[in-house]
Image 1 (cartoon, rainbow, N blue to C red):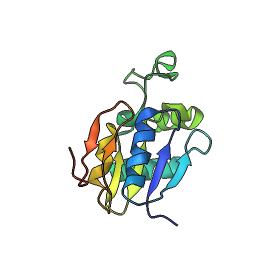
Image 2 (tube, rainbow, N blue to C red):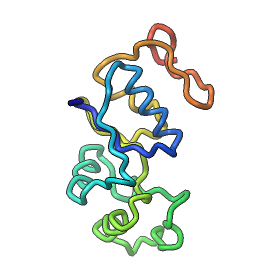
Image 3 (cartoon, one colour):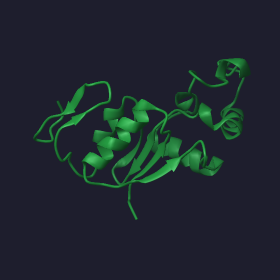
Image 4 (cartoon, one colour):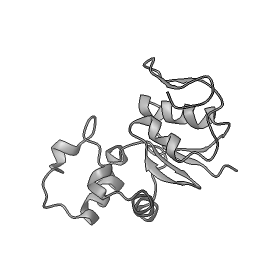
Length: 140
């Protein structure tokens, strides 16, 4: 079993790039498709604390019911925002990656390089053509 977990959305390019960089380090992570298997409230609270994020920092606006629910309004408490994420997991920004070196919201995807225990095994190019890692496994 891997000691790396990614809360992943396969429809998201950032999430796909992050997963590919994990695999480029020679690791096969536990992949949790959080829209199919949302983290429990307790798990989400722990992930946010471990990543040093406030609930509002993990809220996703684009492609979600964020605006129709009025979540920009400061009246909503963290507990209420967590309730909304529980009801609408798409509100959780992604990907969130957990490794022995830390927990991060990997936006942009190359943030994952900060917490991977093993170096990149060679060149990595994102889906948009941007080279992130060179042939020697160094960040470009």
